[in-house]
Image: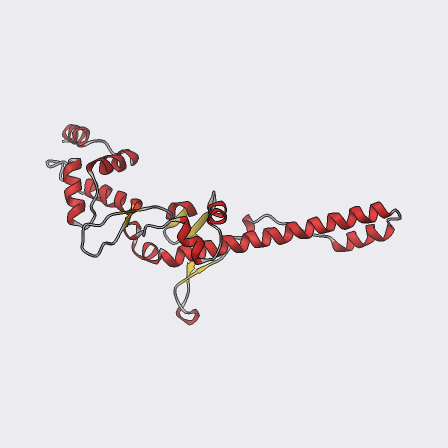
Length: 212
């Protein structure tokens, strides 16, 4: 879960785990002591000691896993600050390796803890994997990159705002994107449009003609 922190706490975003969703392992030490004290055979005492050791290891492992999830989520939130403030068009390209290096963990560990994990934000609930996307080249001199989600958002907005009498072709969308600083190929625009279940310009023209 993330929330906006007040000024007296430094501002920015606060991230915390939802304890209700975390697996819990409780060790009843009183019961363990009672059972072990009544054990007579050596193998029984060793068995009980082994079970206690395994239980402690499991508790420690779950705690480490929770801390890793929190570290990863906090770093994602820090890097994607503009997204949470301004929206999807400001989502930055980001890969697992960047987060792994920032928190000094192996990339496979980050991959594992972000799989099927979700974060509640002021903009809705997102899977942590949502924030990982490779960049697309920028058409401006700054060389900034744009995430695939941000480009899809731009395409959808262009189409949502299109004049029913001037339906935008994929080529026209490529031109509009380039004018806004995003340099992508026509096939990429078509792929993203189809992924969003948006019909082609021919189909949209036919549909909107029937609505008139």
